[in-house]
Image (cartoon, rainbow, N blue to C red):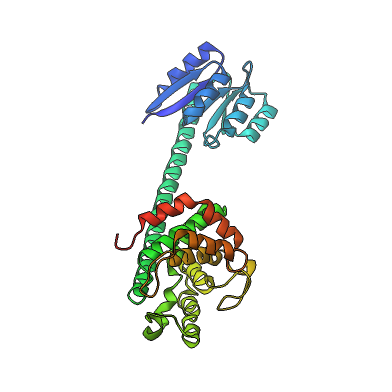
Length: 347
């Protein structure tokens, strides 16, 4: 692609001269303007390789042109050659402060014009090469990041599958509750990055059940007090399994695993903390997990009706659950139903 040379001068004979000189340069295309204002409009949509601008012009002079050019996004490094008179040193100093790259003095010497413009075009070519290199590096970083995210996602899915082999309450349950959790996070106004992180980490909430004995985990009826104390250990087991990882997903999963059975009034387990001392992800998952568990049929219980499950959340708001999380969940009811219908057991 030809180098784009922008020339601004209010004298027609100068424009004709400069265009003729630009044609002597290799692979260059000249764009001329008699008014700096018109040139500024053109440069909004075009990225010139070199700008040649006269100082003495009506309306907008060369200094003001440079100032406005440098304010345009992406035009802060375009080489600019200003044409001035020999005795205008103070003007040159001001032009340098505003971003001028070089100067040509009147009357313009053809040999000097060609030498200086060639040098500026080399600077421009180097600038574009650096920009291309930076863009390539950014693409490579995005690819590497995507690979890391994919590996993390695979790790989470494999960990959840390990739990699924032992726990009849997993399967579509973890997909529903993870998406419910994301909905709540969105309703609370959490950043998009946190919403996505929660979607990835929420399925790990019950990973600690891999450490619970089968006679307790798979018992079809209600657990007695001793068995329930053993079952409660899954929150600690999950935290111990995941904590210390360099992965943000597994770090979040560790806090969720440990905190999703805590209650807002401090009566939960394993630490008995309450209110905002419970990590926000754990407070969110508590609502999502309980709702889906209540409305799902299990070998040891029938599914609750939606109305009964909603009443349970409302009644537990402020005691079992964070009221803000309950409110955000219920405010997104249409989306809750869409998720419930999308992720059915065996589908």
